[in-house]
Amino acid sequence: MHLWLIPILPLIGFLINGIFGKKLSKPVVNIVAIGSVLLSFAWVLKTFSGLYPLEEAHVEKYFTWISSGTFNIGFDLMIDKLNSILLLIITGVGLLIHIYATGYMAHEEGYYRFFAYLNLFMFFMLILVLGANFLLLFVGWEGVGLCSYLLIGFYFTEKFAGDAGKKAFIVNRVGDFGFALAMFLIFIQFGSLDFATAFHAAEQMPKETSCGILTGICLLLILGATGKSAQIPLYVWLPDAMAGPTPVSALIHAATMVTAGVYMVTRSHAMFNNAPIALEVLAVIGLLTAFFAATIGLAQTDIKKVFAYSTVSQLGYMFLGLGVGSYSGGVFHLMTHAFFKALLFLGAGSVIHGCHHEQEMSQMGGLMKKMPVTAITLFCAGFAIAGLPFTSGAASKDLILEAAYVHHPWMYWLGLLTAFMTAFYVFRALFWTFFGEYRGHAHPHESPISMTAPLMVLAVLSLGGGFINIPHWLESMTHEHHPHVDTLIAMLPFAAGFGGIALAYVMYVLAPGIPEQLASTFSGLYRLIYNKYFVDEAYDAAIVHPLEEGSRELLWKGVDAGIIDGVVNGAGKTSAGIGGVLRRLQSGSIRNYAAWVVAGSILVIVAIGVMGGSH
Image 1 (cartoon, helix red, strand yellow):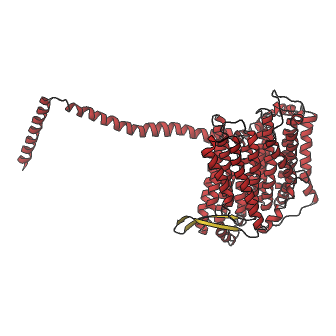
Image 2 (cartoon, rainbow, N blue to C red):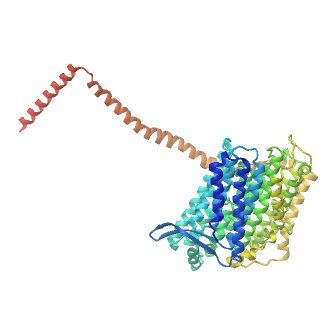
Image 3 (cartoon, rainbow, N blue to C red):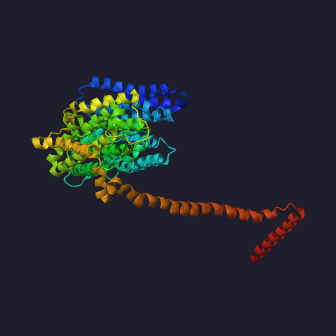
């Protein structure tokens, strides 16, 4: 089926725009960038329809990539039920984001460079999900890390963008170190990094009731996933990723990079199933991340920050689903989240574009009349993330919560509280932005059709995407059984969603003075939440500043200037001193040279006489 065409098409788009884009017109850049992703999406559809129903993985082996003794890695690509979902999401949602970006970035510098980076991002993400072994997955994993650095720091003349790009790159390296160690252990234990070989061998191993090799491997994989998918304690890079252009935020937060950790854990479910301790750790990390990030979202005033912390929280839900054994629920929520989160970010970008780059919601309000298409589509995304009945978010989130209830009831109740907060802070943002009187100074306007058309498509998917029966599609692969819970337990998430929306409506539409009163009454708590619990400041104080000071004082002044420069400069000064003495011998005077010859001859004669006398 020529799977190699799926990633190679965006790579060609990257090469054309990256090499020749400066000389190309914007319409040609658009055709290359969008066309390459459109062709890739079309080839995914053709491949999927040709292999449906994909009861077995289809693997294509192209060439031996690395061969050293017993270590053999092939450039092998595969497609199965799991990554077919990811391929459709990446190319489909990625295509909509590319189209949207033509309108959003129309007046930006570096237009061709932006689309070259987007295409390269797509290439590496497709390699990540198509790879048939851990090493090829890791190549894509590192590639999207590189592209996130380039895209988050796209406005490189601005210090905040450069800092955000570096932060994303460095924090992800911490997680990637864990992933690399996991691969070493996988090869040592199973003699191969091929998925089929390693997973078949893992399935034959007994469940580890205490820590063992599988548990160690899975815990290291979790470390990698917490970095890429922004879980506690490595979540701090993702909210800062909004420093890049809004289409970048949508691509990273919804369709590509942050889903990599969820995909990698699900792909490795054969190992995790026999390492229940690691699964428990995964569930706890996911639940705590979901709750923690949701509390931060309650107090943010930057519309993109609200949705950024929402991403962290929703990723926590996905990890909770995986940790309680609902792999299909986690992947299902990955898919529905791609729809409504891409819509939330692109809708936020439409608002920012219409308000002339204003991001503070305190400077918005009353935009329903000015931007009706953006408003209606964003409310569709809000209904989905709040989990209202018959929306995509309800179908996937409820599946996770029900599995959590069967696993540990306390996880369900904390997840339910998180769902209530999610509905509240998302609709707080929507009501604050679109209702009431306009509080800004610009002249807001609706975005062009190139931006609103993708919003409308995503709105339909956000509402109806839950009818795509992903759990049934995956159950034969993950071998899981969906739990049955009481009707009350199944209905409470709906009540939490409606409750959060109702409270937001009261506080930001009916009685808009309440939030200020509460912030004043609970000023200490409000400042704590608004400042994100000062986690970034704690990292700076405990890690960043000591490293900077240590590098400056010890490595630069001590080692570099003191030792290395001291040795090099000392050698130079010594040579110069010796040379200064010896050059006096080269006076140019024949009398001096004759005197030196006579003196030297006398010394030689005396030395010979002394040596002869000693014998």
